[in-house]
Image (cartoon, rainbow, N blue to C red; front, side):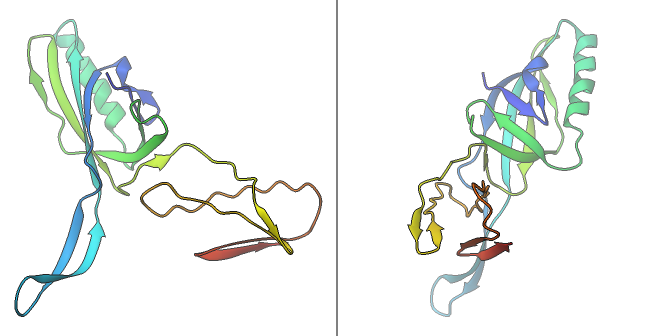
Length: 183
């Protein structure tokens, strides 16, 4: 069983998640330009959104309890912007997602239903919940250089925290995409 937390709510309090279907990578949208002789040239490639499908079972005592539970779930999934979603099988990641489409139920018995909900991940990526500490920089003249390695598959901007051991009046941070000066 996979534990899913949706916008801070552990869904196992209400349903039994049986599977989370997550594609490999993102939808790729290609813009092609036909060649004169054969085939085409890719003129633009865009990574699209990601879609997860959460499959779950609803197990209640009777029809009244099932209907009440459906209203509770409707309230949980009623969000107007992407919210944080975590899965127990990916403990160091979270997604920002929003439900998409209709959530219907398949009635297996009077008290037992199967269902699924589609979640759109607009930015299409998993976000890391782990931080690495880099305190092994190399001192070179008047600067300290850190070599940071991004193990993800999309560019990530580092979060930098500086602890002053003495007042020096100036901090400069530079990477391949920009620079920041304080002091």
